[in-house]
Length: 407
Image (tube, rainbow, N blue to C red):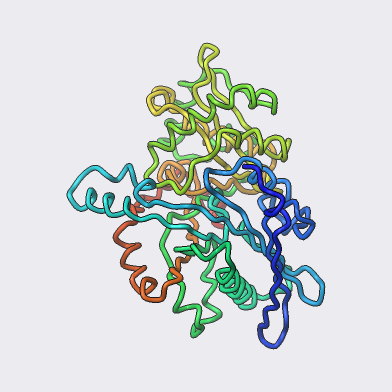
């Protein structure tokens, strides 16, 4: 998506007063604006390079906005916003079959069209849509985020916003403000957890990981590895990604069609944009059978964390070669041989991720409708439309290894 000159230069400034201190909030529309620092925070997902990749090849009808927060001319925080047109019916297609209630729910959802403002990053799981200087306490962070949202909703580009989505947090951001005005405006929503796996130094590769598994999980993993023994696995460089990007996008779409809920669809140039901007911090591997690409997966190197990202495969081919399980095992191998502390596997497919050793870490997210009356009905509406999030946690490690994970 090409942004106009006006979009690049659009800027608003607001003075926000919290607890007697005045903060300057600066809203702008492009990460190429000098107000966006090269690195905001300590994660790749808060870097200018990553956001440049997003804006170069964004999901359809997704737009990006940023707020820089300063105190006495000093940068203390950055907020990253995404705006996306959203039709719940399109996102719940897979749930349109079954009993009468499910069909009715889908048809009702299809009638709703909203412009959603998200404080956070809908493409990844974690606290990656905002950052603050360490000296800023959680209570002040929350107030600055909420005050910034209230302000930008009054501005012309945001007057059609129908839903505010604030994500992801590892704890309740309103716990320090139990009686605040904002506690009544924002509704907590339960989401699937972030699946996170601790990587043990002692593993030193896949063999060490396998030896730490209980017998039945080790047998299962080795069977899966034997099935792909005849396939070719290759990491692609930028020119190679560009050459087969349409194929990669087609495989990605096959996975999307099989997922229960989708807020967006990636653009065809998304993976090459990430590789172009991030270089060796972004990896894409493909699986080939007789020279034909049958699947791929991607990861980010984010400091001492390996972060799993989007992938693609044909469901029938996945069943034959157990590709998804093999992809998870390959990520574990890469993480342990390259000395990563943690492997973050995001949401979805929680049970199979649990079966390889990931633990579900609860995440906090919130919704709000600008209309006060409709906002009162929001918890009921969310409960009616949300898909089933139930899953069963597994424990694949031996007792000794399990204790190590918890330490």
